[in-house]
Image (cartoon, rainbow, N blue to C red; front, top):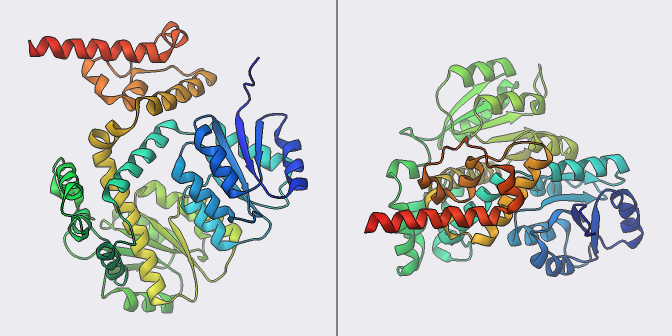
Length: 417
């Protein structure tokens, strides 16, 4: 019988450590082992639809764990990534979690923590979210935001110096090509209302909220940032929550992690519940890896330590806001434009994984699940809450999708006649 255990890719140069990891994981998972970043890339590319998680140790000779993770992530967003390091590396932990790693663990990793983290990562893969991520990447690829292109590089440099972001229109205008690239982007952007491409629905400068108990720090930040932003400050968690409930629309939150009434990582989930799309940058005086990891797990967009240079602060604000802006704009475009560019095989693979996941949980498969991957089929007007029969699932979802597409095509031909 074929091995039905989830497939894990282990990337680890240390043979002894790899054996220890295998002893922990193999009873529950099917494991493949590679010993370098380059070998990981060659194995990962043909198998990424089968691999459920990748565990990368930061002991590789040819590439560090972050570079390996980023290279694999460019091939596919679908598997979850877990990074393991021998040292409490603040930059590695922050950058890996910022760029979408599932978790960051420190050696020595106890067996149960590794098993639980891997099991939880696989069990909670959100295949709809993966579809959105790949669509977003198509959008960014079409924008061709390449920092080596001088016009775009200069635009981003100028914006970062003021903590500001570049709009899609500005990026397209700065691109040196005036041929098919610009025509394609202008056609895509024409599908949207121009107001959807702006960074904020408000007029005037972006508004920041700074949550900090030290009045001198609040005053210094106000002086530092007020030339570029409308800055509001509050001294504690309750004032912050009251502001977010009743105050004006804001574009970014700066949160000091040590407040008199609560730690910032504990306040963060309450903030995200009130304004889930507003980016939050954590500020602290200490380079604490564990704290950085926890705040990023809880929804922070970035992490910066004191003492803070003006240029670093403005660049961090610009990067965080730019990312949030791209996410917002791409979500508008991807439904009608970029999802259609994904291959049938790729979308069917993700849908199959989602169906298996829901079946394992004894959750019904709905037409809404089908439409998420094949939105054109919604034109058949089958209600989203209709449950797909188990017999259809057993016979094969590909046959069902093909039948629906044939029905839709036949209807379109009749309408044309």
